[in-house]
Amino acid sequence: MPFELSERIKALPPYLFKELDRIRDEVRSRGVDVIDLGVGDPDRPTPSHIIEALNKAALDPKNHQYPVYSGMTAFRDVVADWYKRRYDVELTAQTHICSLIGSKEGLAQFPLAFINPGDLVLVPEPSYPVYRSGTLFAGGQSHYMPLLEKNGFLPDYQSISPEILKKAKILWINYPNNPTGAATSLDWYKDLVEFARKWNIIIASDAAYSEVTWLDKPHASILQVPGALDVAIEFHSLSKTYNMTGWRIGWAAGNATLIKGLGLVKSNVDSGVFQAVQFAGMAALEGPQDCVKAMGQLYKKRREVLVAGLAAASLSVLDTAYTFYVWVRVPAGLKSADFASKLLNEVGIVATPGNGFGPSGEGYVRFALVQQEARLKEAADRLATLKF
Ligand SMILES: *Cc1c(COP(=O)(O)O)cnc(C)c1O
Image 1 (cartoon, rainbow, N blue to C red):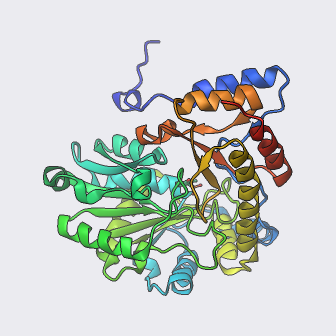
Image 2 (cartoon, rainbow, N blue to C red):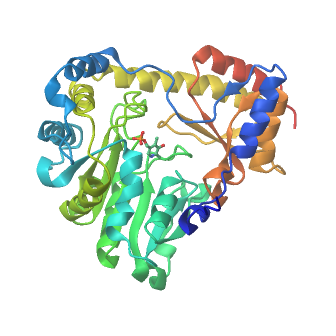
């Protein structure tokens, strides 16, 4: 049957990792013990007290029916308490918070609520691909903001022309950043909020990695800025903080109109998060947080182990105290994809070529610290033998 994909699907960029997957499988089939540091999916299990909360809630028939679309009041109250505790930010559960089936779901659907065909969305690159595809699905157009090393991987939004800014409806940011590991400060958020008010632009902040750190305090939240609730929405995820990528739970918090708009899209598309999973989410946020600290220390150690191998190969690593990514400059004269192929073919290590996250990622590769320390030590030993 001559079924044709829609123009919007056809407009999606080609799957850049396909060639690398092909080479990986080919290298594996030669019997090479491949160390996969490609995808950013935590390898450690979900802490057991969270699993127990799920088990208990799953047995209660009250949780077997459709959940409340925007999340149980109890879940949203727990999120509001979390903001108060973590950031001293006061939010009202009913108007400022909406549960999500993983934050990816919210990132993808949010533009549908505020973008008309032809509207511009300011999208950083390199970045998580969903900002771009969500814009495309809503009929909007992405205007890219390069994240450059010389600017600390922060977008230089001040340099965007007034013509573009007049047409822009949403500006996406993501700190701590995937893929670069870069972080930012409350002062930077303050300036951004002021800019957003001036140009009447929504700030959509993806904070998936705010808790993935080995520092004592969390990364700043844009919602800490006085007046942020006038212009900002923040997307959070339990996935990376509590090793819950498979569970699908997160939330959006911020401006009431933005939350309401997102909720309107969602109530037409999905039916909320399984309540037993919401109970597990509450256990995660309210329970002991030593698991979060321990994961931070684990990633710190893993990072040191891998970075030692990278340094032995004279590769230059971007420093950070956040995320479980290592962003590395490729040797002069090589492209990201060439270097990723070389890593696979010569030392059996999978890393993601930086240009897969956007053109400004060219010249870098990303390693995800999602293997145990002994495997990373093996990776480091192999890296140290690399010649170029
Ligand atoms: C992993 C990730 C998410 C999405 O996480 P969910 O599992 O959908 O909650 C969002 N943004 C970035 C940058 C990520 O790396």
